[in-house]
Image (cartoon, rainbow, N blue to C red; front, side, top):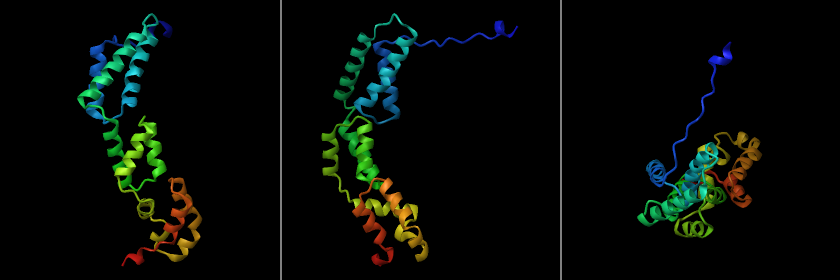
Length: 183
């Protein structure tokens, strides 16, 4: 009785063409600053989805279109891995993130190690200052109000800083820091 009424909806996927891929890429770039690898992943996801629903479709031509679009956008200045890395690096440093965390996030987005090294060479990064920002934000270590609570929570506070990606020496320096020393 219900079987006749319930029909499965078949997903229809629009045909992949160079113009459609270019429009998808432009719309994505309008919303997000991204890397070549991330844009390639977005476009290839669309190509693979179309190929999945249309088994007779040959993806080799579409892969060439994707590479042409990426090279064109790089030439136009729409895509720039160095600019992306500098912006993200600056934002992460301002947020008090550890160098390991920043490197991991940039590699995840497909930024090459050479660009990451250049980015850190150009930026002023201090692991102690970054860890201090995190401690102040989380109100841990020397930023706890009560001295007895500081002593009780020392191990947990150290764990927070280590899990955030800071090395042991930096963590110990932050744990021994007292905000009153600045005054």
